[in-house]
Length: 631
Image (cartoon, rainbow, N blue to C red; front, side, top):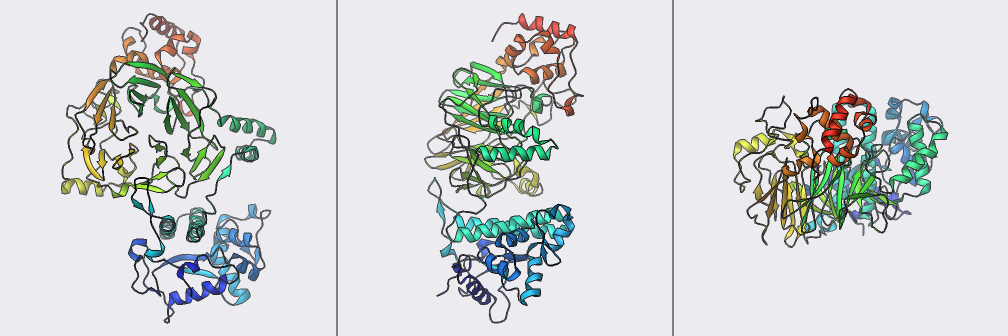
């Protein structure tokens, strides 16, 4: 008895006949498929189990189990069939275009002579039939797409449903590209994703791993190949490969901070916590534009301040903070010892945390394990220019541009942010303290803090708020996300509100900078420029009165505010330049006049913003710094 799941994973011997037979049953006696829909949920329970719902493909698909038959019919190899189907190459004058000839072929020619359409033309020409290619893909009934269980014990989409979702999404983007008539390179790249998603769907239904998401070793051979690729992409000769290889090997080890930090230096208040985290029961870690500080959670006392490092992912593991910065091929990691306030230069017994990252030279996110020197591609792409948030338990992650929190080991979705209510756009990002914003910013601008009002319990959204939100799609990418697995499931802060059991229990009404939950989901930390608010959460998740901590009293450790007006020529621009180079006042105090004067190391795009300081000004700043009391 034939089953619809056999369409996706037939035995190799009878694969062609089985797919043909089920495909004919899908079309029915009238030769037409049933009404098509693009949503898995709407075709989960078809009325006629003999003719399930289906997905129509805008281009012919190649079934991974039929590649050998297609190859035999065309005189090609299965690998060549796969390459043509994914637009990696094409067929010209009935001949496969190999790697030697491919660089001479224009992209427009590949687009016109590659993909399933090219294979269809050649099959009809040589065999008179194209029934080895697919235009319609059946959707399995619900009973054959079992859900999985999240770490919170909730049903979540299983492997088959997730594969269907990715396949449908890839086809939808491709259709949109066809409507917009985007350049052929974009269309070909998107169809490659669609064909890969279909291959992954077949693998998921067969209970096999995604063929393009298998772990790979970051071994010496892999590093050498990537080093050679970097050298070629930058126009360097073979002699430079060794230097690139050494750089990639070094990326697997912790590195000391390497100023300058111009990304935030000129545009954000130095006391704005860009990232905040709980450290155990009594510590609060703040990543400021130029410095990293550790505060006592009870008294607000400063434990240490060290120069900041550029990072896109932050993991707090025991007594260490691991900062992950995107690189061309591999991410660079910085490890801060939270007991001593110093950066480490080796792992030395510390197990590197697993983290997600997308290199600049790829739009593919992977989960990296530097300890085992392994990486595994993620099936969902995410925003490769954005960052990611790790949960405090370091088992779960969220990638900017996606809607799901997932498990870092098996990628199983844990929580869907789209299930949460959306009463309106989140509060803006707070960047400045009042009185510290640049002169061209209105003091009533929403990015200026403080505001007098406290966070309020959530109320019912009005129609105007919902309409305002629905008309603004750009607010979906708010990266200020925090989540923790508590005893009653995931507690999630998203779009300015804390949700417990998917119900908003606290909504922030005014701009804030960053947010964090502790490991148990029992404390919420909201960071503003110069101030923190700690909200205790009761057993049922209800927030208690906020306790506020001001850290403006530590401004002398990370800003030069106290010297303004005392040193002629020391304005905000000079202060930001010095902080971008040195990070903390202690580091500035230890610098020589020559070091204070220099601007070497800033990217060329910022050369106009940063100028060498006159020796007299540098000397005056050094004298004033050495006369300041130490924090």
